[in-house]
Amino acid sequence: MIGFAWGGICGSDIHYFEHGRVGDSIVRNPMVLGHEFSGTVIETGAGVTGLRPGDKVAVNPASPCGTCGFCRSGETNLCTDMQFMGSAARLPHRDGGFSEIVRVKAAQCVKVPAGADLRHLAMAEPFAVALHAVAMAGEVSGRTVLVTGAGVIGQMVAVAARRAGAERIIMSDVSPEACARAARLGADEVVNAADPTALSALTATPRSDIVFEASGAPQALDLAIEAMKPRGRLVQVGFLPPVSPLHLAKLLTRELTITGTYRFSDEFEAAVQAIAAGEVDLRPMISAELPLDAPEAVFERALDKARTLKVMVTFQ
Image (cartoon, rainbow, N blue to C red; front, side):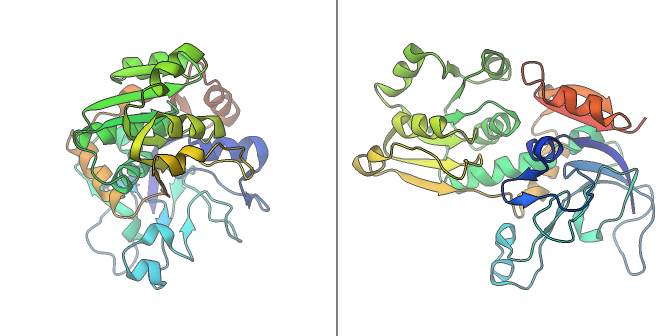
């Protein structure tokens, strides 16, 4: 059992809170939210080795079955019988980690040094998503990368791409506040996608070798295709709506490659290690730290996109 320390509010948490669903995952029974969290071991079950009470851990919310073909080939993120914490994708729903005490498998726990910042470690899950997206892009080193959507995942993809050796990072968003944050967080170039002149500068002569589409907006996917050099690669990170009006002619005429990316596999451990070792610092993305005892205030702040990137929560 884990004593909850810190957690991050994810976009899927917000969708469940607002709409009771994320895509085809519909809340049918009461469900505890939260899949980005860290904590301290309180108690271990019989036979557990390598963990003891008092240990600090980052918790992997994914529990793949281990027996399907994808699990056996190491592609655990594509498990056909995945149990993912804080998700309504299956019945009964798998509760998330936003509880004072959370029961998890020992295999989900990645032990960190005693002096580790558990608030920072709670950001390992979204960073793992970013690491997996960059891995799906192939060779990133020396390339010009465009990230469409300057939310949390977009910003973390930019960090992961920089870490992988990207030469230039361009970010785009329709929100002036998001664009300003992207500039502060280190993007080499920021494009306001609501400004036709700025867009023209990005697409008239395509400069992007790789595009990570992190917004889930059809218009951003159109922009991604327009902004890619011939034989460029697009990695779709954000969830697109079920019906999307897209303009795909240049997919053919530029011989572009589009690939999807979903969650992560062994990148979770890599994300924890990078954070614990100080190789990356994601804490500048934190906009607020709020008590989970007052969930309405937490989600009110998380929904305020003008002021907020990442909301971190804890219990008072």
